[in-house]
Image (cartoon, rainbow, N blue to C red; front, top):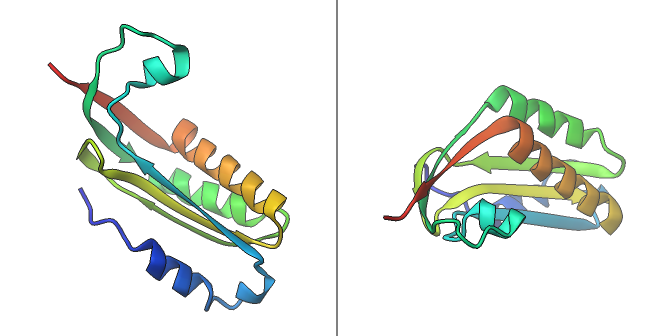
Length: 131
């Protein structure tokens, strides 16, 4: 498990980026290991066992491609991603994503697209169950 970077520091750095003057909004995502299993929150499976942790890994070449794709979206001027790895415990950070862009709709769409692509195409998450 890696040490989680500071989102405050990321924002300060983003605001000094050469393209910062184009950004009217920054939006962050902080994914965290939760106790409720995906089967329960996504499919309503009330019999899903409680999660004790997660095994997490990423294909960083795919992640970098997803970042570049996001940077090419309309109005997006800043993208930064950090992904944890290994066996994570409840409450541990899984990922941080920071997007900077011109207007809210562009930034919201970019964050949604990038996090979705990372979760669906770039990482492997294996829930580890209690008991």
